[in-house]
Image 1 (cartoon, helix red, strand yellow):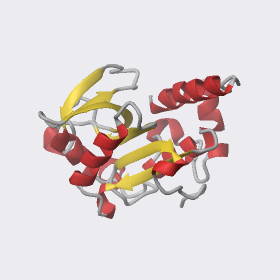
Image 2 (cartoon, helix red, strand yellow):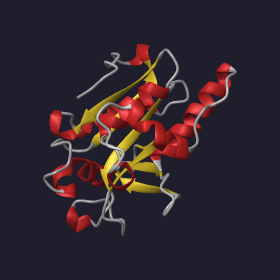
Image 3 (cartoon, helix red, strand yellow):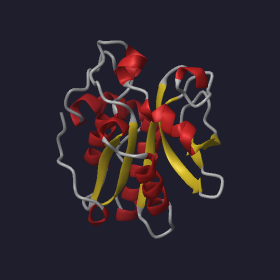
Image 4 (cartoon, helix red, strand yellow):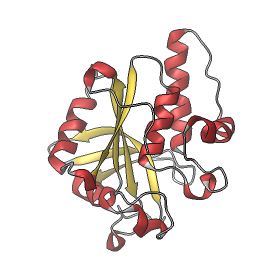
Length: 195
């Protein structure tokens, strides 16, 4: 899952700094309620994390000089801005990555066409401009394979609201969206704590 990707990414960054990574998936999930304010440990495995919670988790694990910033489709972010962020983030010198938060389910339900009717976070591995396609580096153990998806289809899956997916008791009214994770000088640093 995305938790594993965060572990792998943290391991890589910390190894480059000369110190070992402290987390496995199990220990990260155990520590997550301590690292991210507002995470309910009783529903974490069933409901997962919202986009802001994943951003807060990233910030708690990233070394100094790196940040994670949320972009919600419902907050005025446009598909053109998403394309621009993909192009700017996926170059060899960008030192930045994109994590997409989208609804996986059937196309008729606003998803990307998966058999799994659920929300998901996965890093984006590539954007092919001529075909307008995005490579999702899927990290979920039941699929765990990279696949290409049309950007407009992914964007539609990112627009689906959390209340639609989880019912009125979920912690956020926002749509899904994406994270930009990278060096601080490449975007304005976010506050450490978010509501």
